[in-house]
Length: 174
Image 1 (tube, rainbow, N blue to C red):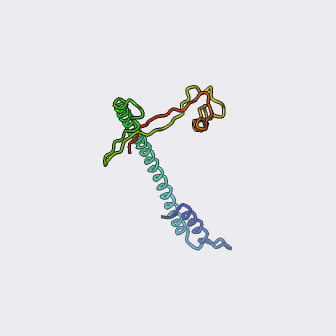
Image 2: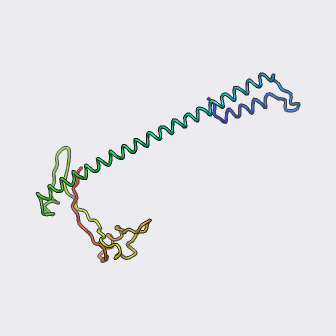
Image 3: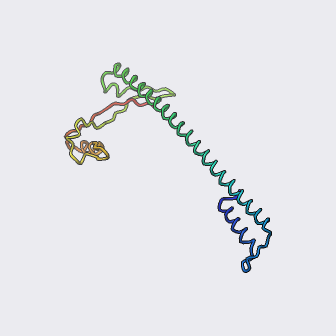
C-alpha cells in the first residue's frame, strides 16, 4: 500500500496529467477523472484509517506493557525482600555461631552450586550532617552527605567532624 505522501502525489499527478497546461482542456472524460480521484480518495481514507487503528493497537500494547512492568516490579520487590530476610537469617545464625567478627570473617562455605562467605567493607556513617564542613555536602533538592569525599578525606588521615568510617562484614553469595 502506498504512503500518504505517495497517495497525495498520485492525486496531484492525476489532476496535472488530465489537463493540457496551455489550453486547460481535459484529456479524459469527467467521469474518468472523477473515478480516478475517488479511487485515490478511498486509498487515502483507508491509509488514514489503518494508521489510526495501528495507533490504537500500539496504545493498547503500551497499556498492557505498563501493567506487566508493574507486575514485574512487584514480583522483583517480593524477591528482593525474600533475599534480604534470608541474608538476615543467615547472618543472625552465623553471628550466633561465630560471635567474634574476625572468626565470622574467615567463615567460608563452598559447594558445586554455591559459595558463601563474608567480605569486609567500609561504609561512611553520618550521624550529624550539620557538623560536616560544606565541602562534604552535596546539594540536590535536599542536602545530603557526600560520602565518597568523606571516605577519601578520612582515609587520607583527615578528621571529619560529624562522620566516621564503619567497618562491616557482609555475607557474600555467588
